[in-house]
Amino acid sequence: MEFAWMVATAVAAAAASWALNAVVVHLVWRPRAIARRLRAQGVTGPDYRFYSGNLPDIRRLHEESASLVLDVASHDFIPVVQPYFHKYIPLYGRGCTPRASRICRSRGCLARVVWRSSKARVGSATHKVIQPAFNMDKLKMMTKAMFDCAGSMVSEWESKLVAGGGGTVEIELSRQFEELTADVISHTAFGSSYVEGKQVFVAQRELLFLALSTFFTVQFPGDTTRSSRYGNDLLGLMLESCAAPEHGGAALALSMDEIIDECKTFFFAGQDTTSHILTWTMFLLSTHPEWQEKLGEEVAAECGDQVPTGDMLTKLKLVNMFLLETLRLYSPVPLIESRAVSDLELGSGGVRVPEGTILKIPIATIHRDKDVWGDDADEFRPERFENGVSRAANHPNALLSFSSGPRACIGQNFAMMEAKVIIAMILQRFSFALSPNYVHAPTDVITLRPKYGLPMILKSLKLYDVYINKSLSFFIEIKGGNEKNVKISNNVLITYMMYLNMVIHLPPMMLCAAFCVVDGNLPDLISDTVS
Image 1: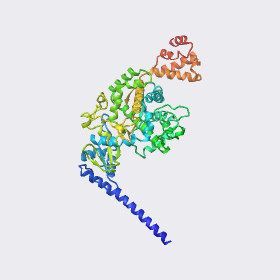
Image 2 (image 1 turned 30 degrees about the vertical axis):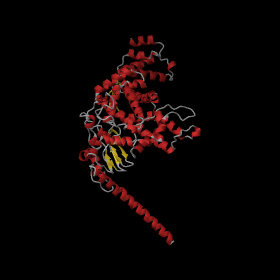
Image 3 (image 1 turned 90 degrees about the vertical axis):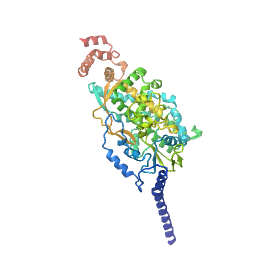
Image 4 (image 1 turned 30 degrees about the horizontal axis):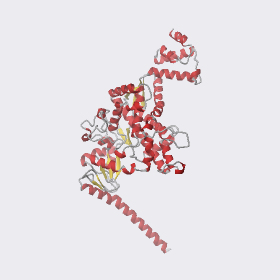
């Protein structure tokens, strides 16, 4: 009994000693040692405080900036979204934040962090398994699926316009885009739909507010095929890698836990970030009507009324420039970070960073750096990307919305393609202006989003087509849903046309033309209506 007590005492003492050592090492010795080594190289920052670090100061700065609202013409949201960078960088340059951290803004620092931290990821089994899902030929095949997913959203907007009398309608777009991009990634990556997987999406959204992800990969293309294989979409490729080699599995196998983790990451990156690219693009189009007109003309010239194809999208140069400038000013992920897994030197003859240091890359701040982007860095100028991304700034990798180098987002081409398809579809059908109810208050809740949503005033560019299509749908529905067998009596049709004419002031002759394919007595109908 006495021996057992001695053993228990020894174990408890050892555990207490280990815990105390861990506290001393991780909360006292290591942070101070890293800060001391950085200060010796001229890297200063706020003093480290036991346990809390600078978190109380950061929390206070956030509370002070929470109520700030920007002018619609201003794109400088750093004081609102990242007030600690706004305060610390002018004071300390590349300073320390709550943990033993270093803020990276110099070219050498960025190049070293972005490229070195990517080697393991590029050579990983996961990277090799999912790479085929982003083959450009497969991406081009996905435009029709994207267009179809957006069709229900646009149809809903048109229905609201009709119900409102055909003038304008106010719609909150940010939530609409979240559901749309969820539907797109469901179809293209997981062979499902937003409706079918809604509970999964709700659960995933709750997780997003509990953990910050820094990956920036996007949707995963490939039509699901009904066969003995898992399919060519992203989920199919991962599941196939999980199968045993004798059953057709890949040599580079992923565990089920890895597949689940990748699916979570892919959904976050492919749905949440892409929806906010669309949101901020619509915001900038509404505040720059001259660009809205230019892009509308380009879409009309290259796509007409057709579903945009991959080849058509490559010709939308103005749309591409506009999206790149949107990514510069309103990058969906305004901050990324990386941990130094070993001592490393940032740039040639640069600062030596100790192992364990957190390297923060403030993307939003870098995208406004006048040393990198010129004196007009705070201005909205899509023209800067006229000659491509590499020539838009003083550094070829200055645009970091999709990261850069081997660490660059594996799905960035798909993200851009999806954005082009949806923006082109909207420009084919609507003009729009910012609602007076909009409040310009960007906020960083894992991704950059409008704090109070994006209410937009929409107006149809093809109102007659909308009414005709809605009228045809109405009559087909009341006649049993079979368009070939629809036969409408003159009295019913004339009565309905008179009602539409009274409500929306659409000429009766225009309404008559809508039913030429469904009514066998069109000449009599027209004469009766005109008389």
